[in-house]
Amino acid sequence: LKNLHNRNSENNMYFSESPEKSVFCTVLREAQNYCEDQPVVPLIFQSLIHLLEEYKEETGIYRISGSGPKISKLQKMFNQIWLQKRANSQFWKENLTSYMEIWHKILNDQPEIRCHDIAGLIKRYLRAFKEPLLTNLYELLFLKINDISSNNSDSNNNLEAKLSALNLCFLLLPLSHQMLLLYFLKHLKTVAENCSSNKMTITNLAVCLGSCLFDESIMDKGIGGDYCWSFLGTKSKF
Image (cartoon, rainbow, N blue to C red; front, side):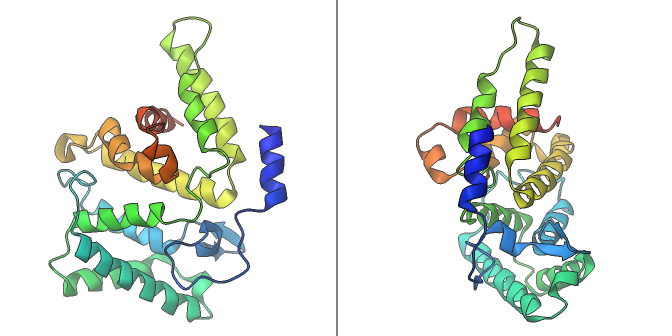
């Protein structure tokens, strides 16, 4: 783990010198807002999560696919808002309320957009990062957590061993990834708490959203599929 961390520091792989023209397909570090010089989860992402949680009891909130053209339309609006905000000298001091006001206005003007389209945009946003949320460097390490077992068959001991390993792996991630991951998982916990109405249990959420955490190559090889539900289920207790 120490060697991996040193490689991460040396490569400085999460920083980019050139500004991006889109909030999609960017480096997470560049999309962050700041509050008193401390990084926070991108407010435009926070606003999407808050917006979707207004529909947290909707059946199949992440399972039912949104409309591709509508998601693309939302994505275009999403980028325009981000670029306009970024051009403003007060961009880094914006607050969540201002973004929520914009999104509510958009939805009022676009009544055909459903919550599943918003969920689809959230998934597209997470998948579009140049570096996956669990990072190329550490994602296989996270997957290995599922193979951990204690010296006895006690399931509680197994869980504790996995949580300890998960804590260590989590601390290896860049701060921007840590913050977004925790924020997203807290949101998924909120969704899962309403599974009696939305039918989205932790297992169902993992099936639908596991690919948002890992690189596409991991999922294409079938490596991630067997572990995603276990990772999210364990992380929900973190």
